[in-house]
Image (cartoon, rainbow, N blue to C red):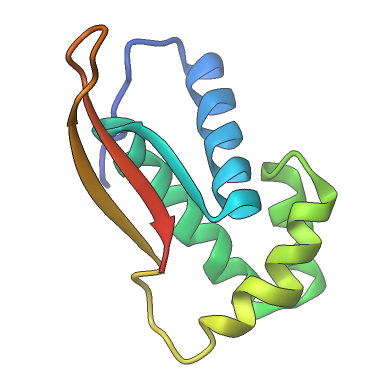
Length: 113
């Protein structure tokens, strides 16, 4: 089983942060964050898109249990998932930007393909 990165936070704060990042990614289509956060967010976002591709009631309820905003879930099932119907994974792209000015952390853009 793959191990999750801890990202320097307790489990509840880490999961809340990742849920917010996934919600923002699905809402906006693109987010800017650090490389390690982008890699963790990618895993969860691709799982949500795979759930949406199934399209049944159970998968919709599972997505609603993870994503905070109901309108994002509706958009995910109605618009985002049909775009990836013929694609087997690889729904996101990470573009590295370079170090952040304040603390030197490597930043990246995470976007839907």
